[in-house]
Image (cartoon, rainbow, N blue to C red):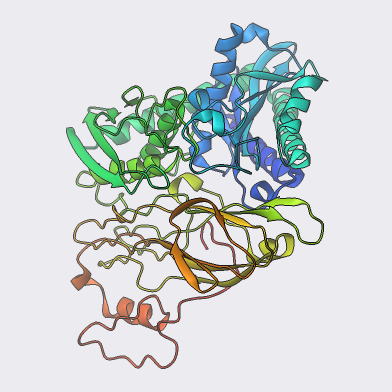
Length: 571
């Protein structure tokens, strides 16, 4: 096999990423529900025949690290890669195999070239209803059997022919069959895009050259990772934190992270964390590995795209039957909160060894708001669902970003106000950053948001999940923690805290006000420049005038920054 030249290698490397981006675009364009085409609660990846990542598109990084788990679980279940045929499509959502909750369905198809298996196109997307005991999802489940139908490795299409009975089972057991059907086939269309375009790439360069270039890219990524880890001082670093509760009325959950650096290898050990909870704050081990990879990549060569050569020097350990390696029949609806805390702890554990690269903590939680009811005009059922933005932690050289989704969300966005109000009987009265929510420091933590909803129809119920009021987003190197989260609903003049509720009655006229936490500060607050303090006051990011600062606030300070935009990356 001739050695591929560097220019060709770079062209092929970027072609892999381009193919994944087109897969992602086609998924969003074809999807039926706003949670995919607006919020982008989905991810795609292009893999070689060994389920090693060739390219991925912006999406949920917490998904991207577990896509190969669906392929590997299916290959193992059916007895090896020889079981795949052109035109096959498979689905998996079992939390114990692929990690996250049952709503996140992995759909993938094998890719053949010249009659031989050369790769896979894979997708993962959130389906709005999969037959849980409550519409869409349930926050108070105590077993996975309450959370919806559970698919092990499952044939959806066999050599291009639909498995009609399986497809009918999937739609008949959903309250939103049309949406499920449409979103599933949008995922299949994305997989077919990857299949077609990888074939075209091999037509252009030849299969041997494409595969050789991939191996070169893998070797480069591994070498760069090992060099970066080797530059960190050897040692063992232990950090720990606490979640508020494992569900409505539940007790606290503890996370303990031990990070060991030895030469060019790194180990994350989660021993000492809570056993699997009686509620739904648990996840399968595949999702824990994905979250650990996310934390690692935040610090180690974040500018280099992830490939099959990344993470080869990272090992992840978790106790069996713990929140990080749940076993049947444990519920797994809220798989991310403890993973988000673990990511924060991982970063903080390495702060002393790489102070220029770490960020202060964020309230890494989904901050979910879910309204369920019937459209008053059509009588059709509706389900809304969104993850509310938070403030990110500050870093050496800059303030944290305001109104961003949590680490695991990546490219995920909340539903724009215009879409929410046009599709559902919901009105949004306020959408603004939350003044004073960013932790003080030489660099200030990012601000959380305020979002206030009014329900316009009777018969609506509310489910929420808000976290990190006990363990706030801490600061680093003298920075102060960010503000806390709050959620209150007012019904007929009576206000009730609703940090975690399931199917709470929300009749017409109810008002829900949520405030998300801000990120931690970085460095001594006394070292913040007068110019930055002045700007914070003028722009309404803070309402507190520091002693000795001479400034005329006029009428603008303390009002926040309101608007009907979408909070997401860079908002």
